[in-house]
Image (cartoon, rainbow, N blue to C red; front, side, top):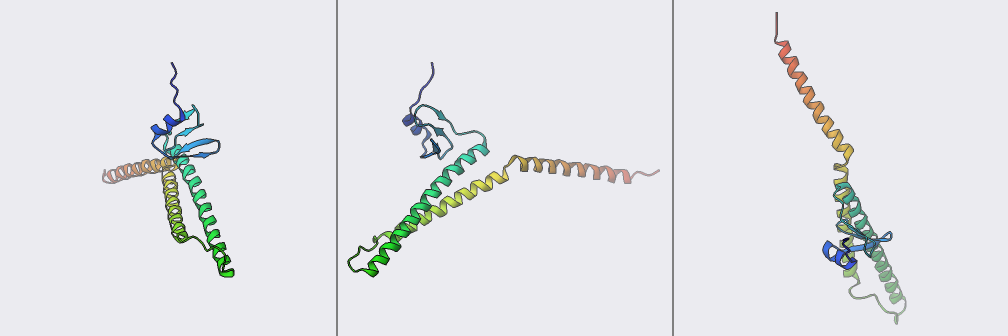
Length: 156
């Protein structure tokens, strides 16, 4: 008998926040769902997992950047209008605090994305293969040097 899990149950089980990106819900932990009964667990492959996490964080960064720019525009326009017209509404009292919080969120998101990108680069299959090849080559060189040293000590 098949097991059906609703989106609400899946979301509770994932214990992670999600965003609706490209016609699907993408969770911070890499899980995905169509919002109904089709769910995908986080991938086991670290490269695929990093790609999905980077996509999630990039979406959040774009949204935070837009929010920051909108708030900055609001503050600039309201301040300009208030300075020009005495009866205009000034910017919100907490506008600078909001801008600082958004700036902090953007900096943290950028750092998280950079950390994932660095981890992806250091763990790419090509780099792992090159590293293993270099280690094997180094061991072979050491073995050949040992043979050469031993052979140079043999005389007739």
